Every structure is written in structure tokens, then in C-alpha cells.
Length: 159
Image (cartoon, rainbow, N blue to C red; front, side, top):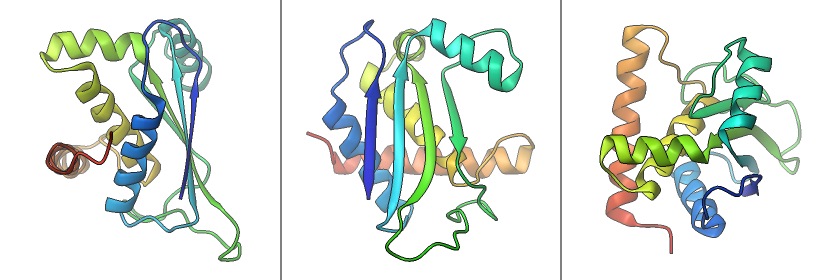
């Protein structure tokens, strides 16, 4: 598995290696294929606002956006791929606003790192086909988010 981090903001120092290891752990827990690739971009609120307006038509910033390269056929399934076993399977991009991460960490009374992990989990689950538009899907996704957050806390895969 490959995880690429692109830190495009200067508002908050982020341990990119820790984030990469955390993402790698999450992908393993979700039973993603070894050939999977994930890209994570860390941006400021201004860039997130621009992306949210451009791609979702919402004229405001948000905490996390996910852009799947391919659609999963069902939640928790990896995207279908006709390519060979040696060809990378690019899941897509998770984009996180670091300014919003900091604000939400304070609001929810937990650490910046905990909030960053929460948003990373949320973004990865979207790439794997999970959603929260209807109540039943939201319950499933939220339960899985809690389960993965607990696994992270218990196993501390990061440095």
C-alpha cells in the first residue's frame, strides 16, 4: 500500500509520517488490497472553501472532502478494477482542512491529533463507499468510525 501526503498549508505543523502510518493502519484494518494507493492533502480553510464551492456547490469551507477515483460497488468494498494485480488501485483523495481540524478539536474537547484521525477515518470510509445521507447508512458509518477510532487508540500504529 502507498499513502501520499501533500501538506499545502502553513497554519499548523502536522507530523506527515505519523499521518501516513495512521492511514496505512486504517487501510489494513479495512482489508484494502496491497496495491491500494491513497492521497491525502492538508489545506487551509480558504482552499477548502474553494474546493467545496467548486465540487459541491457549497459556498463555505468544510472539514473533510473525499474524491474517489472509482466508485465502490457496495460500502466497504474496494472499487472495482479491471487492471492487473500489479497495477496500483488508486482509491482517491482525502482533503482535510487543518484550520477546521484545530477548531473542531477545541470544540469537541479532544486533541488535534484525535480530530485529524477522526477526519481521516471519515474520508477513507467515503472512498470505500460508505455514506451518511440516509439514517441507516449514517448509523453504519458512524459505528465503523467509532470502531476504527478505538482500534487506533488501542494500537497506536503511529510514532
